Length: 153
Image 1: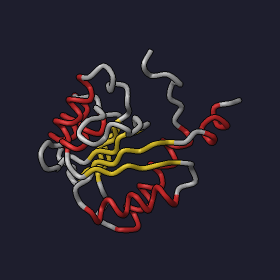
Image 2: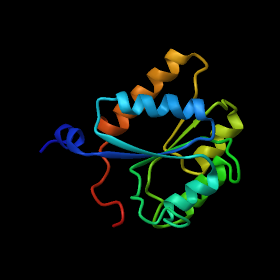
Image 3: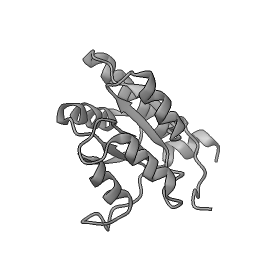
């Protein structure tokens, strides 16, 4: 089976970490509309994200995501704190993390890449552009990206 056939057959599990309900709804709709087979879990703050990823405090039965879509401006723990904790944990460090933020600040981008984000995307203000970004994000990570089969090795 070639990479494209493998990508088209796999189910992609997204973890969305977003406190803005309207942004979360756009993202959820975009991922549902996408041409890839995927599932989505949504948490609304940084502490819930870490509980989800570490399977504690009510998230014990959740499966590990294939990709974390992470906002920076979050309650309880901000996105940089979450990213830092993910990268510091050997059981989580290989999960791809895409920052999706309203912040286009150079300092936020620089820190995110220092903390080893896989991508940094700025949320467009225009609704149609935001939808297009989510469609492209979903298609790229759900179809074109070719991760190793076992990231725990």
